[in-house]
Amino acid sequence: MSSGGDNLSSSYFILIGVPGVEDVHVWISLPIFFMYLICLLANTSVLLTIKKEESLHQPMYLLISMLLLTDLVQSSAALPKMLLLFWFNLREISFEGCLVQMFFIHSCSIMASTVVLAMAFDRYVAICQPLRYSTVLTNPLIAKIGVLAVMRGTLLVFPLPLLIKRLPFCRSHVINHTYCEHMTVAKLSCAKIRINVVYGLAVTLLVVGVDIMGITVSYIMIVTTVFNLPTREARHKVGNTCVSHVCVILLSYVPPLFSSVTQRFGGHTASSTQIILSILYLIIPPMLNPTIYGIKTKEIQKNVLKLYCPQKSRFQ
Image (cartoon, rainbow, N blue to C red; front, side, top):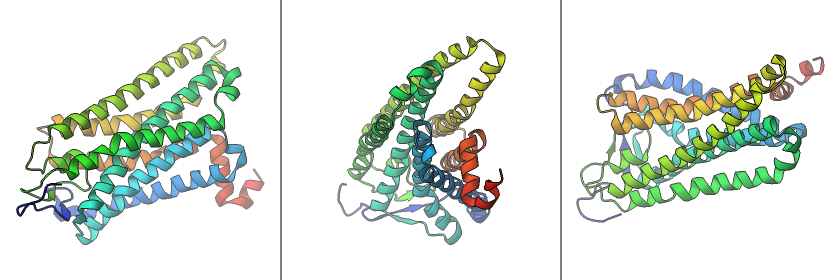
């Protein structure tokens, strides 16, 4: 980061929260707090269940655990600090802390997208090539996918904090947001941010474009296979196994894409609306994903019940 006597951001930034509605920050925080509690409880329950039950140490459940873990890390990178801001007006965040928060929020988003793509491939093999499932989708392959997801998220996002660090912030160190989002911070700089804009947009298009294309191809082949099944009952049974994954895909891509579009092109959208959408993007998918799998996957539902109500589960 450039130095100079007029550089205001050498040590910290100030988070505003939701501009224009500061008087109701406490009320805004209440549903966020309860949703975050549900997120922590639901994700932890499913993760502990998958870890504890050896019968769930299978590719599909391991991919679910990867997705829930990235969701949990991403939401926890932003929400505790956000709640402190809402409750106690603790607006200051160190420059280094801001960069760390930015890294985890954006890298976990890419990791989650990679896992969702892998889950689409898992469903493709399970439905279109069921006889090869046990030989293609092995636990060592899932471990490699996990490593690839971490490497992809880390390598693509690591330049973002470095691009921020090189910028001088001589006009303002006040962030009109509840957390350190890359473009929101970059726009505070008094230098040109073209590299930040181009690189951020390129990463978004690359990740979303490649992953959505792979998911689309997988589901075109899945739908074709489902329609060719001999009986209506078989089509219903196979199609039902994909419902939870389709819900997760929608939760993974629709909120962040809508938030990104409104931030970049929503000139007539209120700033407070954009920020609330970005908050919902961080909390709704992590809250609903374990609930979706808990409802749609009987094995997880049964073992979560066993985790909390061992006596009751014996009689089922």
